[in-house]
Image (cartoon, rainbow, N blue to C red; front, side):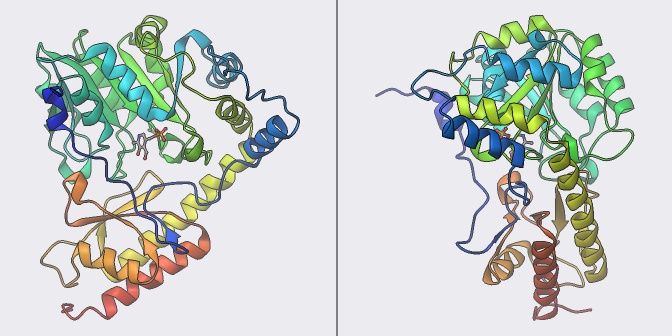
Length: 368
Ligand SMILES: Cc1ncc(COP(=O)(O)O)c(C=O)c1O
């Protein structure tokens, strides 16, 4: 066998761990479950037999795209639907990357940008992140004539920071035409700042911009694998050449279409998130644990080697695991001193706040 050299560059994905029977705050999933409307649509389709699972799914994903187009006041030809954003990222990289070319992103962000770039032989360049934030001018400075893609994550996984509409407008003005800008807004529905980018408006002005959203987070459908990209028709046409004809199953298409109407579930997910995030941040403040400001459904906490709290990040993860709570150590993101905590249900938030307090209190290295 002679596998491609690019395979040696690939790091295996490190998923958030689960503890059997415990609390899972390690993968930024929706703690309230799935959209009830989506679940009803699944039951209806399967129970009444209308899903016709003996048939292949609609290859055009027509109904969902029509609904998405109405929802975003855009055109269905400006949409591509993928088997999660993960697959959409691979399709995008497949359309633009090859050996000798590069992509640019930030140093501590979602690993699938590097994965997608690397499998097509491209090289990833990384900009530093002051205060855990995407530094758009630094990203712009890394672009050269061989750059084809820029990946921006907003809010960013794992730091939870978000950049503003104005920062994005300035950045897009300065990016050369031969570069496609991918903005991954997997957590966009949780970003509550009034200056969060109105990316759809900018797509009308920039033919090299694509925005990704997913049904995995706010709609609670991570297990179904469905996400979508929005861009001008020409760009969607190029990326669609890499789409497998039946990439999204019938049940996922039906459930996503129903979930989009479930404003009640979206609202309650946002309210739960704001309340839980506030409580986690208040507990961290009380314990003197540092964290980045969060615009997402998780908080990125910092346990530097030298603090009045003796705790190290790996020990925090272990102490919480001893209390049956799984959180995400961020070594695989290049942040060994950080721990990411997803916002859970009110009970789960209480449990993690109490467990953190206990971990700090009982730590022998603590010296206040
Ligand atoms: C920033 C970001 N983008 C995309 C994804 C994956 O989305 P999907 O489940 O639609 O593949 C995740 C999942 O954690 C994520 O954190």
